Image 1 (cartoon, rainbow, N blue to C red):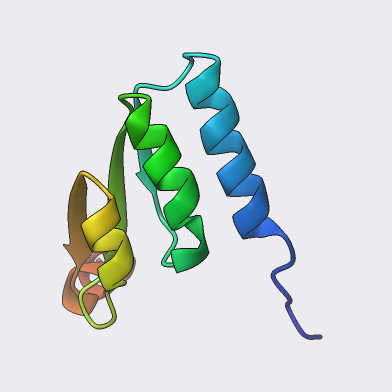
Image 2 (cartoon, rainbow, N blue to C red; image 1 turned 180 degrees about the horizontal axis):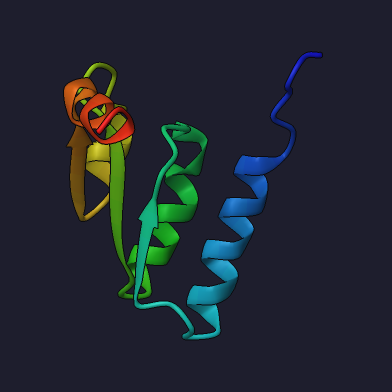
Length: 85
């Protein structure tokens, strides 16, 4: 079995912009490293929505780091600690 991500980034972008336009979103926490989301993030931020990017310290997306309001990077050791605690 092969897992394929299809259209997830588009769905996230549509949801972000739609919720921002309807004024149903004050803060978005984005757990994706897909730089295709940058235009949606810019639009959402222009509507005064705070966007926080959650990524991994080993491979942060610099574009998302610069596009979002705030970046939180997880260390592998922190995740492994929680998983095997």
